[in-house]
Amino acid sequence: MNSFCNKFFGDKNFYKTVLKIALPIIIQNGITNFVSLLDNIMIGKLGTEPMSGASIVNQLVFIYYLCIFGAVSGAGIFTAQYYGKGDYEGVKHTFRYKLWLGLILCIATILVFIYAQTPLINAYLKSEPDVKNAELALKYGQQYMTIILFSLPAFFITQTYASTLRECGKTLLPMIAAAISVFTNLALNYVLIYGKLGLPALGVEGAAIATVIARYIELLVVVIFTHVRKKVYPFCVGIYRTLRVPAHIVKAIFIKGTPLLINETLWATGMALINQCYATRGLNVVAGLNIATTINNVFNIVFVAMGDCIAIIVGQHLGANEMKRAKETATKLITFSVLVSILIAVIMFFTAPAFPKMFNTNEDARNIGRMLIICYAIFMPQAAFLHASYFTLRSGGKTIITFLFDSVFILCVSYAVAFILSRTTALSAIALFVIVQACDSIKSIVGFVLVKKGIWLNNIVSE
Image 1 (cartoon, one colour):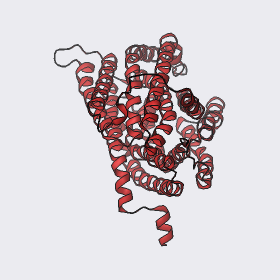
Image 2 (cartoon, one colour):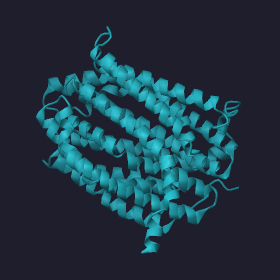
Image 3 (spheres, helix red, strand yellow):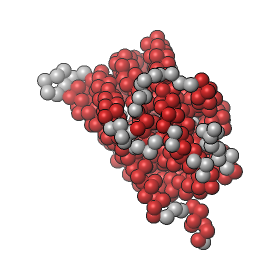
Image 4 (cartoon, one colour):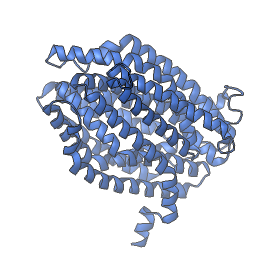
């Protein structure tokens, strides 16, 4: 019994270390997603079409967010291990790599969204039987996207700083910056959407303007305080003396990081395609899915933060050549993540009926949202295990395996199933959702085997 507990559970000091890193991330994600919930409720008060238009755009922009996440995470594998090794010069090189790659991705995304926004939004609306409703949703989506594009540069620069800070174990500043940003966003939403303090009511355009302003405030907080407190964040000293990254580091990050970048991009694309399959069941499904996804994001903050913990703590152990300790830590963190997610899932399951009532939409959309929230709760422990397994494999630089494990699976299995069933059967959106989620049980088995075998135990920054 003792050996079982020692294998799967840590002591008091272990959980203190975990919470020291995880708690700021949990608070940051919690605040962000809670305010996102309020943001959705505010836009939802305008009606089903404005909410659906903004929701579709946010799903498309989410691809960019995960693309940037993949870019910084690929270099971040090296950042965590360089920091564990005590090599600050290596940390600076990974930071500069993130900046360059983020800039390229940002420019490419803006060009795509400028020239292809109408067909991209219409892909979610072509199955809506009411043409007038579809045209309204498209109009609101175009208004929202045109403005939200201005926030994309701020996002990639902020993520470059925030990811580097987290990989060095400094999670407090990104949390504070995000908190300031989201509360600013919330206040501006109230003023700009509804026209308070003598300003005109701008609707979805007001929501987009609020998001843009909040993103730049977050950027300023992170950048200013990182460079002011150089003793706390020593990696920033002289970081802009050059933007050159040594060729051997570029090559190493490119080889390990590119599969991760492609993975995140394809995974987000796969999710957007799957959601488009659900959208073939009508605009009410788009609205219901937006409600459920927003609520799910509030409840899944713990297991999402545990993924970051695994990347940071296990990555630093690997960089310090502590292989046995890395494996033991990963096992305990995965266990902790799954157990906590079970408790949260139970709460989410029983509170599901209350959330859709907060949105100003029709009863069909609310019922779809309620059922999808229940489905998210049922599958949450599985999602927690998959998330933790993914970050464990990634911490050791096994990015080709994570590419196959994540995005190849979602495109070749999950999306394929969703596409075939949505086009060849009359199954409801709820039934489609359950079947697609159930497919991930295959991935859970594969993830368990790969983590247990320890193929991810690698030091990728050793000389």
